Amino acid sequence: MQNFAMNNGLEIPALGYGVFQMTSAEVIEHLPQALAAGYTHIDTANAYFNEVAVGQAVRASGTGREGLFVTSKLFPQSYPYEQCGRDIDATLERLGMDYLDLLLFHQPYGEYVAGWRAMEEAVRAGKVRSIGLSNFSAAKVQQILDVAEIVPAVLQVEAHPYWNQHELKSRLAGHGIVFEAWFPLGHGDKALLAEPVFDELAARYGKTNAQVILRWHLQEGNVTFPKTLDPQHMADNIDIFDFELTDDEMARINALPQHAYYSVPDEPPAFATAVNDYSQQV
Ligand SMILES: NC(=O)c1ccc[n+]([C@@H]2O[C@H](COP(=O)([O-])OP(=O)(O)OC[C@H]3O[C@@H](n4cnc5c(N)ncnc54)[C@H](OP(=O)(O)O)[C@@H]3O)[C@@H](O)[C@H]2O)c1
Image (cartoon, rainbow, N blue to C red; front, side, top):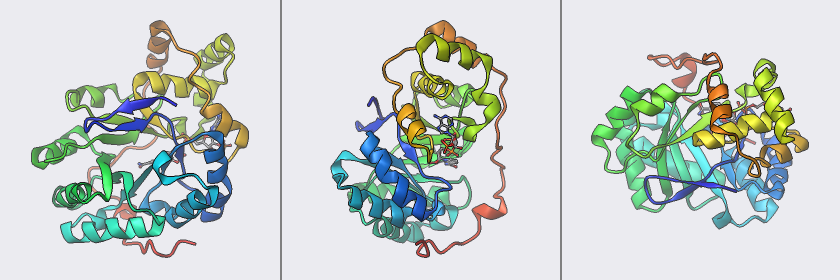
């Protein structure tokens, strides 16, 4: 497994296992398979309603906590300063863990500037090792940078060969922020997976099209955590460290037409403001 260096001196595994849209039962079944296959990095969120199952699956697998990198995310209802501290504790309680490796603000709405101070306090208290943001534009990241005593270590955004995020990356260059790619395989988009450039490169390297895409992410410096319930895909997705795309091949992939699958609206959509009870999970 390759790691990327973060701006706080810590490292993050470049590849992990994402559990978005997985039921608790699916997590209990498939997360131990992923850990057995060599994954050490798990990406969950309050809003995935499966943190209790993530904790149970990790404990049942016998994998020691120190060997894992666990990320969760808070939704905007948790950002008000005092609420934020309480909800970080509730997140740890659901997971049954003493600390998180990474905690993100999931959506760029509400009182994220006030909440950042609570995130920093959680780092100082040893409850969270690294903190970051998700779905924030460069302008909204700047609002955090303007008040931050601890600079965000990570920005998790939609990224894949159809949306390479080069503009966002160049706007935030210089802060050492590691980019994480959600929808790394385009959420399984068959058109993306079947692009002729991936057919050609997969044949050249003896890999699958998905492995070529994940290798592109790695060389772009993107952390990924592709989601899969398929044991063969699980094995394939982590087997990307034994080949290297050339600069020309990277450029050909980066020449694909660009479009996002999802545009983050400036104002919060209804789902981002709904107050959910995350204790109701299993
Ligand atoms: N911060 C955010 O707002 C946000 C938003 C979305 C996602 N995320 C994170 O990003 C993670 C990944 O995103 P995602 O799950 O939506 O999309 P994704 O990983 O891009 O795509 C998942 C789809 O790709 C298929 N797939 C996986 N490996 C494959 C392979 N080797 N070959 C062919 N198909 C393959 C899966 O089907 P099979 O089961 O058949 O393999 C599944 O349908 C999430 O789990 C979550 O942790 C974060």
